[in-house]
Length: 85
Image (cartoon, rainbow, N blue to C red):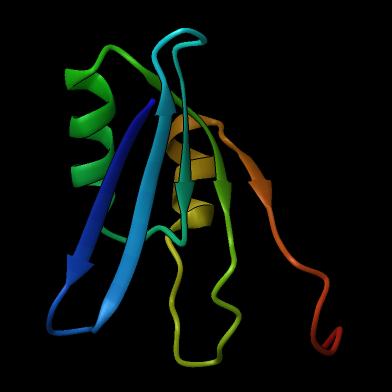
């Protein structure tokens, strides 16, 4: 198991990378819009990012999950909590 914590001090934003060396897969939790640290960490460990999960449902949080979907083709897991609008 590979676990890495990322923290962006100016934005007070935490995110996490969880990877499995056996399956070769990585999940990113609450990714920042700056994807480079996740991509570099996964590549250095010879893992591929397969999913992103949104657990920080706040109006003040700008997620990088859509960028991961667009750039890497990840599956996106999001909560259905909150209003539909």
